[in-house]
Length: 209
Figure 1 (cartoon, rainbow, N blue to C red):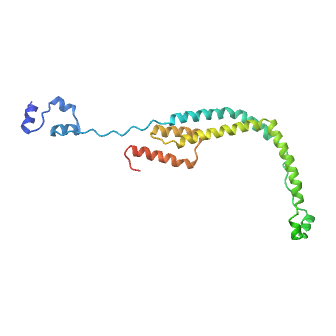
Figure 2 (figure 1 turned 120 degrees about the vertical axis):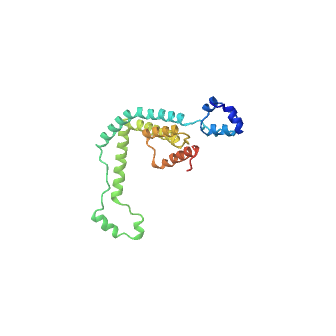
Figure 3 (figure 1 turned 180 degrees about the horizontal axis):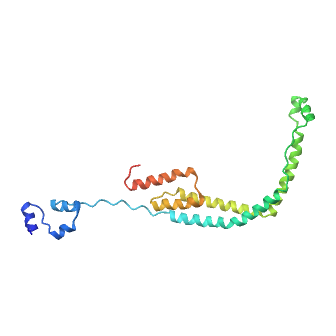
């Protein structure tokens, strides 16, 4: 076998033994033969620490609280609607022929003071109905549990909104948003946030968006 070092010296190239050559591949081997220094490619900067795991945990906490309230809320709501169904909600009646004729005889000045007889009757009836409906709400416990349920619903919605609006830096972050979406279902208007996330991750990978 010819001496590699002698052959290299004769050709004016850097000396490289067989073991070293085997350890070098591709462009690195060619660069070694030509005496060229290869600068390693710069690694992409690591994405900043994600806030999304903590935001998902906060969402799950509020979400589980809402789920725990649902049986009591559903039972109270059923009791409320069953009792309310026994009430008859008033409807304002039409004018009688005599009332229509009376209105036609009014002067312009009198019209300003005129009040629909049916409206007066309806206003009194609807006040009575609303009073009875409120009593049913309190008696069935629906007023209290529904107020608490709606407040908790608002807290869950706020927690979910924080997740979707937090900038995603990695596909793991995108997966976090997908999990929260399965539970809460974001609006179509939130798609813009996700598209910005995808574009951000693509640019980090060197792609044009």
